[in-house]
Image (tube, rainbow, N blue to C red; front, side, top):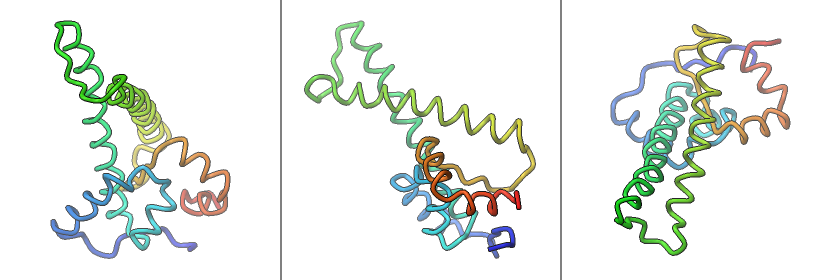
Length: 143
């Protein structure tokens, strides 16, 4: 895998939609795993990770909306012990961290590195990078 991973042809709209739907569940995985799922198609993996990031942003909005409505006496959380609001709050913190790290890496370190940047959840990606440093060094072109 010494050559750069590139998609051979552009994906159709149906393929983009299918990878995006799968990405809602699997787009948080480390880049190495996402590229294995898509058979090294970087554009498909990008759509997976991007749809995961967008779904997380939408879910993260639930916590501030729920807490804001609670101020006015409206309880919109149907779960016991406000579990949905708590989960959304945790997701909000993780989303802020994920987007900040992604932005810093993309815009400061390598703004024109790739057309499609595959990005997983930061903690899982760092853990995977420790287990497979040789793959990430080849993928990032550091050899």
